Length: 252
Image (cartoon, rainbow, N blue to C red; front, side, top):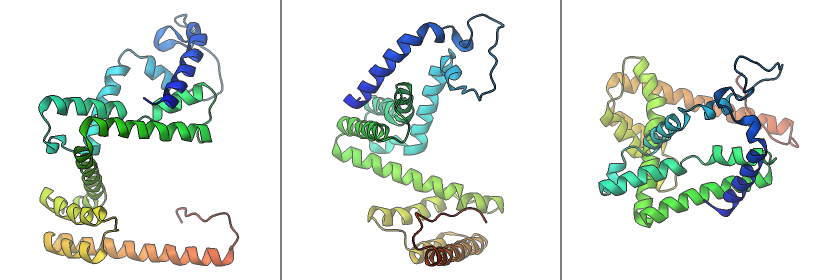
């Protein structure tokens, strides 16, 4: 962990030490006397109670390991020995989401979320996490890991959007169809380009059934029309309010 995060954690430890007597006592730490309650009209953040539950650490670790699986897919594709694969999985779980740790440490010592110091600490945490993983794997295997992450992300997006729509119509995509469509997107992504609509549509025509393709065409046509509508509206708004601080969209 970097010096910036270590500094925040040291400050957090100091703050926690000053308040330990008030916060000790298990899940009902608001009042150590069983059966007593504290009257308040404010919204109560339950996060602290969750973290003081004896089951928290184990459940939190399981969730982190599931996040690793969702983000990277099958890490066996890296071809690592079993012991190193296990170590990598644990390292990724340790580093996959530094946001909560940084946020807790920063807020506890009076650093506001979104402030320059907070953003610096967050950037430092993510950079440190990536550096630790790359140092463990080496440059080549680290690039392969990033490719796995990209592939998993593209597949997840396909399955949750196009896949979900087709499935709801009784036209679910097969694993091979998802892989073929995802591969087309990844080819462009690796070249730092947006996927060509023509290439994507051609691949869809190649791998989808006629019924799937009909719904796919309806979806993509509607998306194209919606995007064009938004672009026309944005241009009209800019013409009418040329000195606006910014422009945003909300559901009509």
